[in-house]
Length: 206
Image: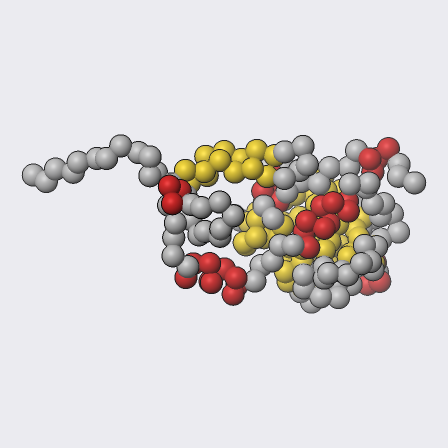
């Protein structure tokens, strides 16, 4: 049964998390890089993971996990797995954003990022409690990818103007994002403009 705390749990997109320096936040993200566990300055250990979500595919941010025991650190099975982390602190240093997670105070759950039926974490900290709305965000994260091949193939396609877009067909466009809104279903709506409705400008040479 969910507690009041998990019912009120809010996950921030990475884009919004960067507006919350030195604050405790919650994230649900995908793992893009797994670094080697190192000894911390004290008697504990630190693990660094690089993560991304639908609001920031590139470059993503680093999350540093600190624990006094190796077994308490996340044991990520594969790049692309999904990580839910609660009460981590957002930091900014030397031009770079990152998160710190002291596992005495924060918690995590690790999930298979592939298309499997099991939606339970394959590893979680002792104090981790999922929230009722986790499943919806979790399933949405499964659909996003950081695949470089997908990125390149999209650039190679011919570009379309808004005035030439046909309903229910795929198009590649270059445009300016004017506004971003979120629906009641937590979907993002982008208001964009490609400039094709601007008045013609006559350039005069002297």
